[in-house]
Length: 323
Image (cartoon, rainbow, N blue to C red; front, side, top):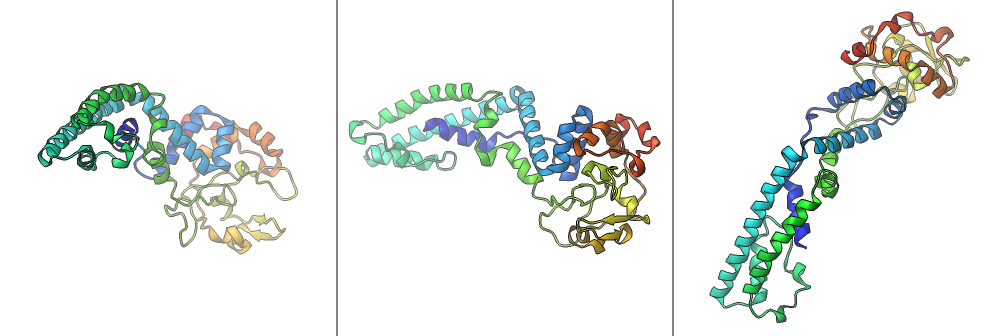
């Protein structure tokens, strides 16, 4: 029982702090940078098609690595400090309970009542947690104080042994795990994706009024979009298409001008896509770098109308990251 009470207190006060203290958009920049650095196509596909799951995995991996990197210089010293503070409070509570019971000529039951009350602000337990103790067998409540003083040393040794780099975050209560706290902070947002390019709506409210929108859209081909009647993946970008004379074909066969894409109804009507020619190099680099992978993944090709512009191939990975 003592071990778990200690752990509950340590979980409350010993957390890892990561630099992603702003919003999901800033976190996404870290994710896109990491994806470009690793150049792992499968991870890209997971991010594109399952963004929320990818965000969660990224946060958990970063927290685990942060704990490994900083455990000995940050987490462990704070944990040891908390252990010492709690030990002192427990020993003080035990001694004061003994003195109070002596004044009132009380018994073991009264001692336990005083003891649990004195620690109610730091440890979550009650007299019921001592239900395994046979009160009738204890004729000297001072014995309880001696037992606690002796057992605490063993308990602290166990805690230090159990709380190491590999197990610390796993032993935290779910509500106090730093990765779950960050996930709750970053993932209470809108996750609706653009029907053309899979870009994630940047609204910070999960179920919000008004249109979905993003500051930058992507190349349609990364979502598997192809030109009607062909297997040619589209190299177009939403913000340029909505300013063009091109047409889109919906799943039910309707043909609608990109300029009036909202007329397609459904998911199209709920997006605000503003014509813009200031496109990021990032997704152009991505399409060039993973062209063959995308073609195999979607069983289509960047040929014909979907031919990748030659100038896109001039972008370097560093330019993509910097953008």
